[in-house]
Structure formats: structure tokens, C-alpha cells
Image (cartoon, rainbow, N blue to C red):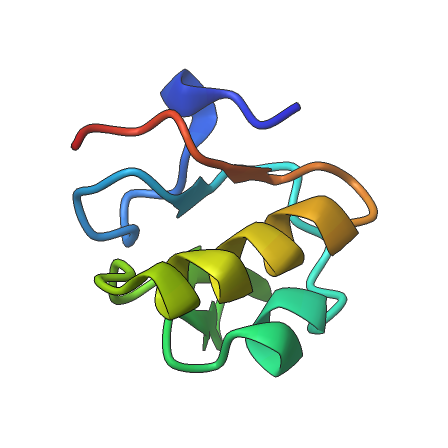
Amino acid sequence: MAELDEKWPENVTGKFYVDEQCIDCDLCRETAPDFFTRNEDGGYSFVHKQPESAEDIELCMEALEGCPVEAIGEDGED
């Protein structure tokens, strides 16, 4: 389970975030590329845009559920 106090500082404010458990597997970036991107220097993903529509949220939830190390959280600031 992702930890809010371990989220990467690059995450934009909002419900979804990626924490330090990320192993750079690329799954979230493939599943929801409009919302997840890569920190090239650090080799990890972060949320660069929060979802707005129900369809967007569904894509982010699919990424969250598919994350092999549970590095994506949905309990960030609304």
C-alpha cells in the first residue's frame, strides 16, 4: 500500500500519487499516460496531472490496481 508521507515531491497535488516504492516498471505510464510520467534522473513514475472525469479516474484506478509494488495511492489531498 502506498504511503502518503513517502510520495515523490514531483506529484501534483490531488488524490492520486506515486510513492518511493516505485520500481519504474512502466505499467502506470502505459495504462494512464495522460496522468503518470517518468522522472528520468531518478527512474520512477509520478503523477503529473490529476484525473478529472470518471473515465480518467477509472484509468488511474486501473494503474493503481495493476501496480506490482502498490506504489500508487489514492488517498492524497483532494
